[in-house]
Amino acid sequence: MTTPAWFERWVQVWPGHIAAGGPDGEEKARAILDMFHPEGVYEDVAGNVSWSGEEELRGMFAMSYGWCPTLLHTPLHTQTDGRLYAIEWRMDGRGGGEFAGFPAHDKPFSVRGVSTGEADADGRIVRHSDYWNLMDWMAQCGHVPPLGEL
Image (cartoon, rainbow, N blue to C red; front, top):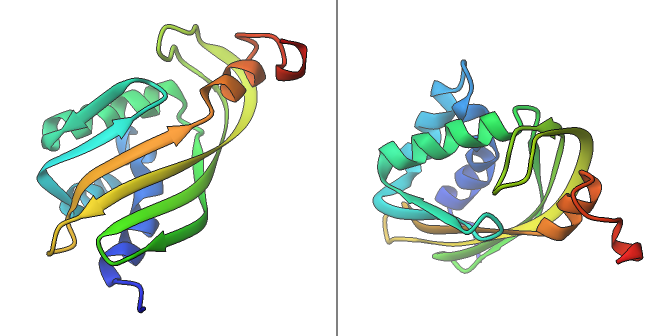
C-alpha cells in the first residue's frame, strides 16, 4: 500500500507543535491547523488533557512551548492503513516549566512515546492521541526516584 500524502505531511508537521507556540511559530501552527479537522481532538493521555478546535489547539501549542521550549520530537517508526495511523517517537528536551502539577526543573530528559490517530476521507486529522512514559519523564526530571529504585 502506498503511504497517503496527507500522512507523510502529518509526520513532517506534527513534531512542530512545540515550536508552534513560540514567538516564531505561526507557520508551524498554521501547517498543523490546516491539517486538523475543525472538530478534531488532540489528546495528551499522560497529561490527562485534550483540545479541540483552533483556539484550543493554539492554547495547547502555547502551553507546550511554555512547558519546554527546547523539546524536540523525533519520529522513529510510522504506519498507516490510509485512515488510522501510529507514530512511534522520542522526545528530547532540557528543563521546562510546570507540567500536570509537577514543578519546573532544569534537567535533560529523553522519553519514548507513540501517537495514534485517525484522518477523515479528506486526510484531515479527526483524532490524535499522544501516549508517552510519564513515569520515565518524572524519574529523569527528579520528581520520583530512579525507576530501578522504586
